[in-house]
Image (cartoon, rainbow, N blue to C red; front, top):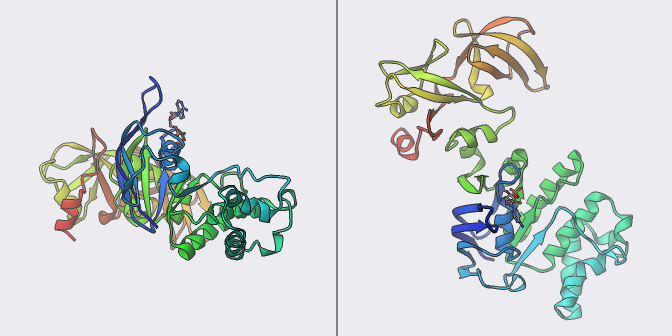
Length: 366
Ligand code: ADP
């Protein structure tokens, strides 16, 4: 097993600029790290650099403490699982699993052992003599996982492996990959553009935007303490409510479209020196509350989802979404008032979008 260390890693494709810029990040041994971000943000490029499928333009990547910049892909001890599983159609499942090992001249009894172990873990025992065309999509995906497993690599790399599967199967395979992780305990790096997938799978999640690392943290921290407005907006469904606000002259509250919102102690600390200025404020749908007084809004749409109801509102501050888990539910057309949970208001610099609640401020109020 081995961790992966990125130090100042960059990738330039010809004259087209940098697809990855100055990424510094350590994936601990045995950790499940998810790389997430919108299409084109450089996550596949970063993963392919670990695999050795792309040259590293700047910085270095270490696997298990060894710099691998100039190490050939086959000598890196990594195995990659792709979206199109590319199984050999004319080979049985057993042969598909064994193929890479046969090429490497691994002894026959060792191949047998590894294939049987992988098939056991992945529930493929019954299918070893079948050809891929006689398998479902999920079973094929399992064979693709198995092919990575039999190599017994130090690091598993996943490039959007589930995007070809239907929604239900995707949820099942997520759990399966997590179980595999618990079972083999290897370091895993997983690329996806789907933030829900990232949140459900990652021990930690690294969010990328235009080739730059925005934040790397565990799912709860990412959700409740996003480093900037990009992360705040990218993580969470429905998305966070983001709007401009003014800081009161006393610096003890904020005003959104003329309505005063009280803030918690941590937020007050973050507002020191910002009295009378503008900030951006983010409020998660569950931190917006229907109240007797507050920001006036009109109910546009109500979405009952069973355990919760989403209420879409139009207000002077723009469109807002509010999540209700208990109590009265308004109807479309209703006029309501909205307030915010004082501790749930996330504050960002109006210019840079960076969180005002930095680690230091938080630590002082922990
Ligand atoms: P993601 O996986 O986040 O969707 P990629 O890593 O595939 O993003 O791509 C990041 C950026 O690099 C994109 O702007 C893409 O167009 C560019 N890119 C990827 N591969 C190449 C290549 N072989 N040549 C030139 N540009 C590329």
